[in-house]
Length: 67
Image 1 (cartoon, rainbow, N blue to C red):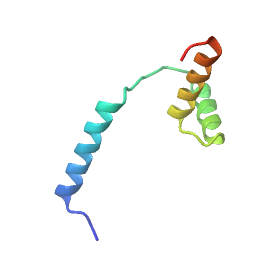
Image 2: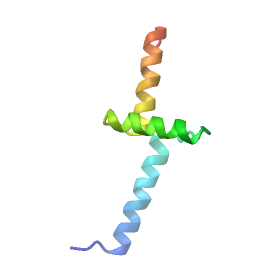
Image 3: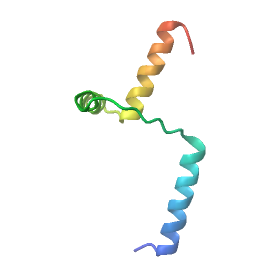
Image 4: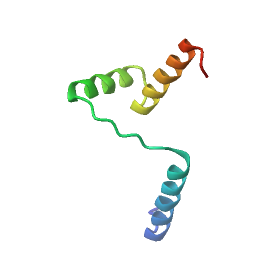
């Protein structure tokens, strides 16, 4: 069964509101080959790029004795 356009629009609006409240966006400028390496490594580990970078950051903090 197909969703009505109004329901779809409210779902999108609710999802966007949740994302804006829950997550922070970080933009970085890196060389294309580095971006491709990150993308491929994340994929090979079964992670999203954000998940891969977040895990690297957590590991770094643990090694430094942080959080």
